[in-house]
Image (cartoon, rainbow, N blue to C red; front, top):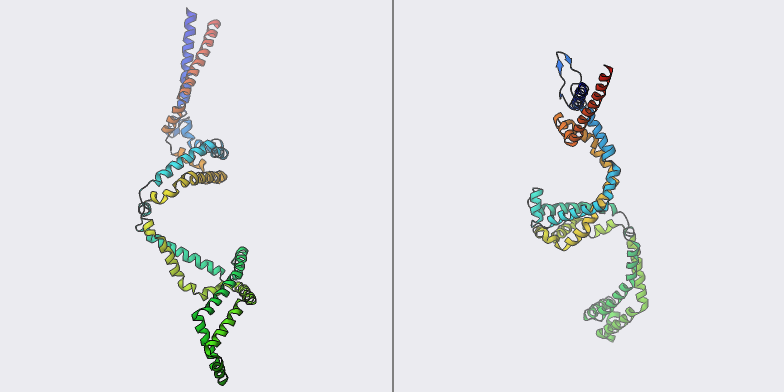
Length: 379
């Protein structure tokens, strides 16, 4: 009976000491929260391990997150997963669909988001300024260049292919004019002026031939001449020559010739007025977008998501550098109170910590049992 009491007493003492020391060691990870002093002397093991090394813990957690948890490779693999991409596309389509169903107009949205009333007027002014500036910059850069440098070879070939048709058109119009009553009247006037300038010789010709007869004869001969292929070929050569000369002239000559600088403001203003932004920006966005909505949701949104994920994956390393995740984690952990850190750790591993306490009691009991045996047999 004495043997059993000794063994039980030693097991109880060992288990109590083992469980208590393990429980105390766990608590000393966090407590005391502040250093304790006796006079000027700080008590050892105060504050607890985690409060004492909270800054170092924050730094280590930040490095662990960046180096082992949220890594560039892991994020790139996640972005490349088709399941993740499909879910993101569905979410984006849902959000875009909600936005496209709004009954608000562009002016209303501008007023809500940008705090700007009469947005269409401001838009018109900005658009006019932008077009004018771009036009002036473009013309300023190109006006010293020859026309041939501003057109493509295909355009040049097309224009040259139209020259024979243009020649034929001009030839036919000249013949039609000479045949017309107006043309005959102009021809009669020219003949009268010609004969009047020849004095007596002109009067004699006019008397013998008769004015009307002379006009008819000249008209018939002139028509024959204009219809000849040689005349068409001559006109075509002239047009080709003029076109080649025209291509060598700088754009500035045409800008000055047509006084484009004087009318550019009015042209831009007219073009912007044709947009009628006052009416357009007063319509609901859903009405404006309706014809394009299927294309936006089914084609544009997936394309934007795919390109965005590709861009993010390619620049992931730079993005993570800019985010400074390790520093962010360090700052966040640094702002936690020790009580909150204790709650976080205990909420995750409370069961495991209790098992450590029980394990300490078990080991203490085993050691107490062995000590009891030793005490009994050595006495």
